[in-house]
Image 1 (cartoon, rainbow, N blue to C red):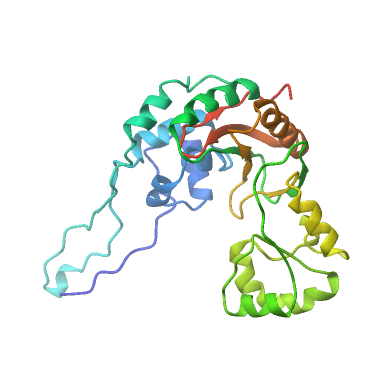
Image 2 (image 1 turned 90 degrees about the vertical axis):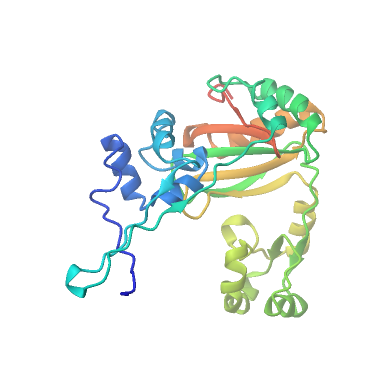
Length: 291
């Protein structure tokens, strides 16, 4: 029997079952149906040309319950072999726990909440969860954004910071990375360049724009360890920023200050939409235009 081979995706015809502008946006992003199913609503909205209302039309067809049929090259009848049926790849539906569904009922999906109200809601919901990190998710207008936040209060998270040295170089070579951030001096950059393939995928490659290349790494490490300084950047392929801004067990007014300052510093005019959640809780959509 002839070996089956996958055909290339026909980008001109795929997504003809969706509105024209949505289909064009997905084609331009080169997203295949199985990739769409795996993405969150926020990641879909980060695609240029996709709005919140478009996500519903996408999910109606491409969701966790969908069966995606890859395009298969069919042997010709001249080969004298039976033509096989298309191979189907079935995605199991994402299951939400009863606890999660109960929490979701306490949030009005279409309503925009002030930061204070969102924190109050999450404070109640997080009582039923073990992990209580407050997560801010921003859908930006463009990619390539990066910078540093000066928050008024600590995030309560301990960041393990390493300063480049021979000992750290040996750890990188052995791929035993046990730090969250790497600092170095400008003179160290030629040495670190050889480790780019290891550090890059972990997001640990020092960069002057993020303040991790400095003439005084020891002072910089103390500043970052204080907890009020937080680097940020959009994801490599999508204009999305994820930030952990503290624990829901902190004073609510401190959390509100941190969230407001993060949105102001990143710049409201560059943000399409913002969502706040705790680990394992539903997200709350924020009203941030007046921040």
